[in-house]
Image (cartoon, rainbow, N blue to C red; front, side, top):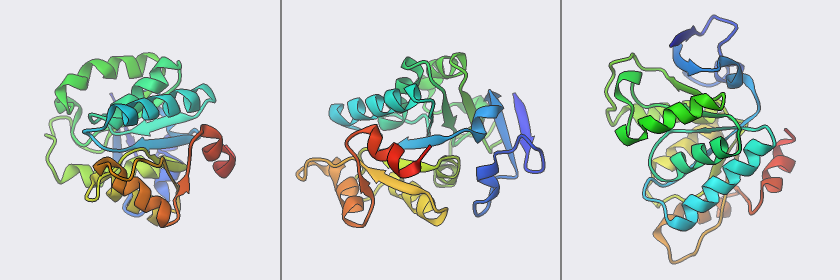
Length: 214
């Protein structure tokens, strides 16, 4: 485990420029990818099978292009995004809302090894023994968006932690993308609303790449 302090050259340049950047980061894996072009993929924990498939496929295709995938290791959209990048042989960054001593959810510990084996990284601003308390996760979300050039929302409910990440992304000047969903589905409310508010509707990775020029 490494500890990267804000004053060090290894500290991510993108995080330096956000409001309230973490004073230090605990890291497992390759620190150099923190400064590479990246896209965050986020969404519901209780994602639909459609949402999981879309997240996995977008992550796979973006990772094939050399884009680092950033997400939060949570159930649903997050873990499918990480695994899509891993399957592509690409790199992904998992941002924790706890210390390394309390990987959350615990069943995702096994995926951490896969992330590291493909040259990815796991990071946290929290001390090793910090438990995954509810208040940690909104703060964690500013790092997910802060490390990324753009944020792709796959599924989001009307009241969702995903939308907190979107708010951070907008404050940080990041591009926001959304995958449209069926209007009758609860998990589509947030994404469809974001599109109405100006988020870019995406159906392929080209919609993202042409906007970010990375």
